[in-house]
Image (cartoon, rainbow, N blue to C red):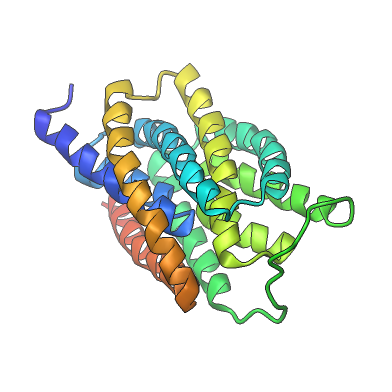
Length: 260
């Protein structure tokens, strides 16, 4: 049973995660797992992963509503991406439950660094604000969805930090549209992973409820901030910087746990 202070820390953590999800469409689950383990004090890495997956899925759904009102969601693209990714998330989460929790966190941090570097590379093609998902690009969209879904499930995350660049690479849509659209897949992947972990009893339900409540308020603020940063062209840099910062911390903590 957790202490009252831990629930307060969970509410604060949820707010931070919700803000990040609204801001960059990803990074929420990147933050959720280490916050659950290192700040809230959840002793089991797998329970932290399962609980955060449920919380991130709920907060992503809230953020999706805000982005939909702002008109930044490409529904057809997001639906195709999410549908393929759910299959990958189911397979990945089944495999992830069998892997040591600290090793999962270490591998996760290494993957974050690679993705952050890729996001900072200059793109040769221009954004396509009016992009449509159809038979021409469907194989690419579905392929990226399946792949990122598998990674999402394996690491027990919503996968937004993979989904955003995946949507950009497969469709060419602008960053702000990728952020809004990615929340469809984040919610779908997170829910799939959470259900798989719930079957194994690896979710703390009261903790998840507190985390979600904090995330709702944070998500609304993050969505407003995303719209302002998108206009100034700084959103991609913010996204990559967030990834590098959290990856460095996770590498340090998980490596210390494995070597200590």
